[in-house]
Length: 164
Image (cartoon, rainbow, N blue to C red; front, top):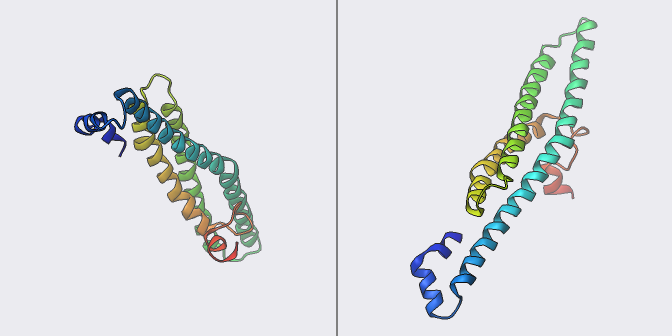
């Protein structure tokens, strides 16, 4: 939709009708791009902070507890294969989530580069940062379904749907 402000036919029509001047159209274009970038930036920084400071530590705490439970069961000669499998599954998800956190962090740094035009910046926010956020979200959503409720640092989907 923003690209329509670069369409020569549309720009000429707006100028001929006296709706905007060429300078006003160019300014509006820059303002819309900047707003787009800032909106994604706020969402990305929020997602990054939540993942780093809340979700990752919660998952590690839960992983620690079920790992210790697995050892306790093993030490008491009980069968713990079901917990070992769960520890491995959660450990893999947490590891992949951590990788995606680091990628998102890198993409944000790249998108915040001062050497880019506003259009280049918008493209990076769209093609790199939004994709990194989506990839991170997949692992967070998977972990939400397996991490114990008392460990999860925020309302889960069911809480939001029925409880709050």
